[in-house]
Length: 470
Image (tube, rainbow, N blue to C red; front, side, top):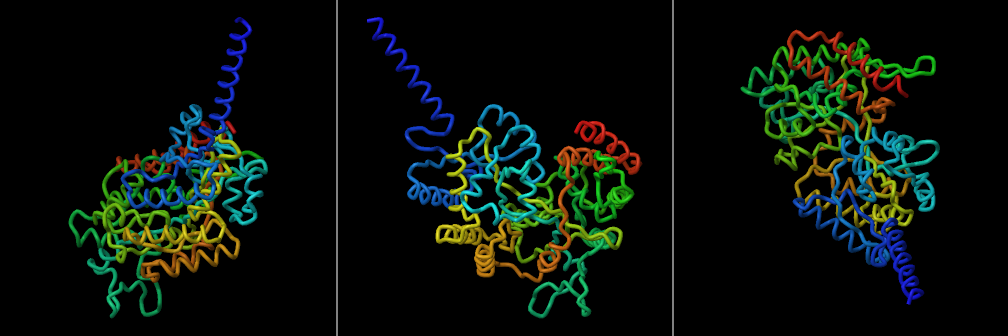
């Protein structure tokens, strides 16, 4: 009897151990479970239907897998808790400023061998791959890239007389000498803003962000274009903060001038959702934004897509012309097994987010465009994450087929982006943005603010709290 009980106990313990192993590597009921953090929220009915179609298609071809919907919105403030509790999805999206921090903390895992196994490694955009690489290991897959530019409410600029129309009813963005009629300098943004404010009640020229680290993110690009080429510099092998560069001071003084003249939307705590909210509600004429967010006023506020222009970032000093270049990568949970990551990567193909060009990939890319088209979204060219010629040929052909905007309103941005794009600063970007947020908030809430002193303070804070501890 004792021998039977002992054997039974051993059998129970072995069974429990095997169950734990299978759960740990994502196996349950004989299936390898892959949770998808990019799965859309249940309120987005057409997007959910599209993802469900991709799931069914994938599981039919790979019956050993089960795709699990796990909608997840990345936050630098909460990712630690999710990683420590092992509740991160198998694959999820983040920002290009985040991978190095996530790698250092062990919150994501490398995928180099699987990239090479699938033949994707050499097909990835090199600058994007570099941003996802540490000590020779790649930790993610780029979804797409973006460049920062100036979003313009064309109808508003037409109504206040800044722009005219062509004979065919389209907006005229160039004069007889083919020079832009839209703002190409920060001073011209101020001039256009004055015209808007003089001709429309309760309307402003521009929205300036200052919260959730998004004000600092945009301010970085503004500072570069006022001549502050680097906000972090290397001296003697060490990193030094340069947030108080003369160009950065001029950029902050420009914001102060715009605020003092009441040319920008009032408020010292506006974040990214506010730019498209104010544009979509026709409260402002212009906003700085990433090219990957152009559709936000359309999808959230039914803003007419034919009234949108997206043009290059303006210059502040007459010579500096940069567009902050970033993007969205897919990254993978640290506890995900090779089997799970391989399944997640294969599922990206079924989403049309891989360098593959087979029928499955083409079908998914077309379905993505068709869903966007049915929702009335503006479909414009994208900054591609892959460089293999067959992918570029297919992606460009589909864009030509589905683009549904007047490309005259976007042409200058896409023509200039390769020459203008500039990677984000190298260290502790999100923390640097938080420091810059505080300086912007002070300017927006205090008419007597001293821009030089504010940036001196935040420069010291950033150096002491972050760079000195590298």
